[in-house]
Image (cartoon, rainbow, N blue to C red; front, side):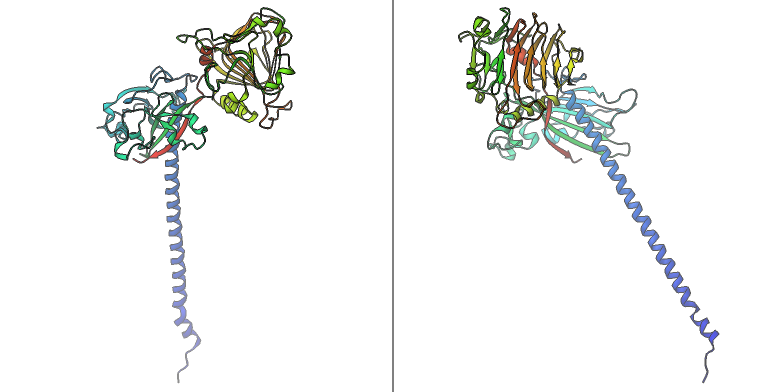
Length: 502
């Protein structure tokens, strides 16, 4: 019998080690390849995400530029090109904001040339090509100081119909019979109605509401990635009703409205001071109406017995507190329930102030004085100004124009004048102790919604509004024309948003 020696056995097993080494190397190689492929896939996914996000935000930037330029307070306001604010935009009228790169041509109406970024979406919505529309164009203002702006190519602004939105707003049509000839409008009051059907069905065909506009933007990156976004937007304004005494729920039911509980009026002994509730003073084409409001209105009937609203200087000079159809002094309980709902509670008024602040031309931290007021306001450019805190105008002998909101104490110089609306809402104190000849034309509302520490008062009860003018002045004169002229839109509220497929 032959016995194998040790060296022969070792030689016969030497191949096993080689196989194991090869297997390990193969495993390492496969793992390395998998890691490389995985890294490449992740890089590709990250690149796609970056590209998608970049085009999304570029298109969004275009939409927001257009939405901002729809407001008159914007220095690049589209009104002179698009339409006068408040005038319905006709169907078939389109405005494009173009944003080409240097040397690039952007022409969305050239449907035969894909390199000029044609607008094929318009025909999908309206059934006719963009070449059939009345088109105006204007350039973007996003490039500044020689620096390129967002890479969107164009933004389209136009009116909409049921057919273009594929939405039956009055539950009267089938998909095949949707209205294609009537512009849609939006009723913001609809959302405040119990049982409201929701934002989509607050659209209607009534021109008494605000017109809904479609804002569509196309963005394109150099790598060919594109994105098409679309807003449906409508002009949002504060819940102010500018009618006189014959209108329901007026925001200003008197030339001077003291909104709250335990309110107080401390008027001057001067016979030159007047508060007049007759609608007066024209502004442009606006002529005053025939209706009138009270000279002084208070919202809590119990306040008459403990305040000097109709005693003292008011009684002595009662002919100076006048309004057509009411005996002098024209002072009346306007009943808080006749005011809009958001004027009846601290939280409602506070929310209104916040809404006004969001769209204000100037928001000034208090304490502030006349030097802080914007110099650009004029009778042709009334402005919305919010002072968060006290405002002291003592020593200011000029005229202001627009909507002025003061959340602290308003120290008014009666040599100053204001044409428009003055709302002292927060601390609710209007104080004037000097003499002068200035006047406020429009309306004044004073309401206390916060305590001395600035904390919001609990609903539903407002605090003690206080009006003190002991030094004289010409007074306060009610004017719906100036109330309307002072009121400027806050924003174009986004009603819906969608990303369109291409």
